[in-house]
Image 1 (cartoon, rainbow, N blue to C red):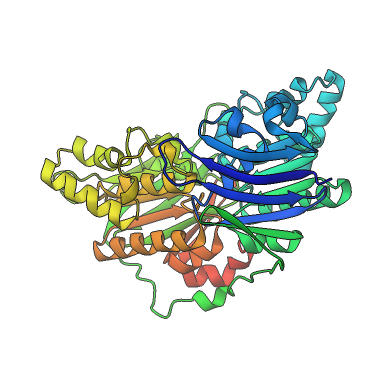
Image 2 (cartoon, rainbow, N blue to C red):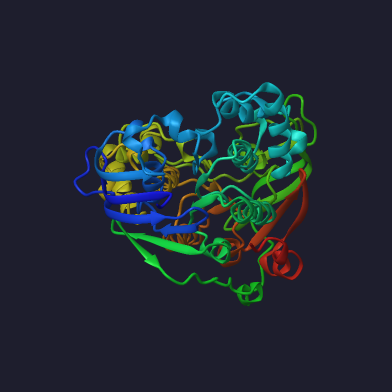
Length: 480
């Protein structure tokens, strides 16, 4: 008897004519480690939710076929019953954290399983040690970086000692070192305890060598590729630029001895000094919790420095409907607020006074540029995580800002569309002498598109140089 059996599974979301999953027939044996890949919106997250019962128990839509776990149909089980065997890590950890402190978050699932308090206390310590965050037990979850939140969500699953782990992009928020460490832990749990693991990811080369099976979702159908190949990343040296980096640019933003502390925490950012010029494409790198998001928020004027200053220089006079700075958060859901994708794109320029006929043209051009025109009348939350990320980028770009800030634009994006998005952005930035700053753990993305790299380490700016200097001195530390 297989541990998981899926028979003739079909699922269609409300309001959609085409199914997201179509005639899925697969079996999973105890101890399998499966790589699930596919393009953005191919149905990877939907399949994982069907396995752990969120579909149909907590999601509406038309479901046909069967999913059985240990020969029990998930339709006949409660979510609590399934949750004692199966754990799901969401792509966005903010959708998974409910408690105000780290220890309460990890205890939450254990308490619902009826574990004794003395055992819970020990399990919390073991789980935090496992993910390398032993000192985070008393931290408030609201103070964590995206990567730290993802590690805490994983620790919560590890603490419950589940039989099946379903992981939706488990390294999307993690730096290279944390990614390697976590994947090694998951692999060890799989081998040592025969825990079944299914990992949905776009980062095939980081997972492939750990898996014994690989599934691909295309056009709502699944195929199994018998061989699992390790896709080698290009050597960093091949991305070196022949043209020299232009350092003398008209200044746009300046940070002088800038420090920032959240209440009760010291050293989030310490003594940052830098200048940003027009026409630059800059990558911001650093390990989880190094201060990347905080630095972007200071640049966007969403936070005020504790010490020092951030000054905006030489901003051009704005035309009707234009903004100055655009910021896309790693979690795009924080900024999406309109009822349709089209309204989301029009929201900013409309509030800045763009006339109706110009507004419609700009909206159409941006939607076509990012290949989201078919979804203009859809609610943003009806789209996949990767598609929502595109909508958020498109909405910011519709303001035609001088400075566009992207916090981890890779989240939820398949490689093909990610490269298409970056090519579009970089072309528009260069042609209009704008500036793009993007934070990323994805070394390949940085090597392909950045002219200049900033590296943060524990709140300090430890490197600021051209892409060629980055390749010579730091690239090997960031390649996954």
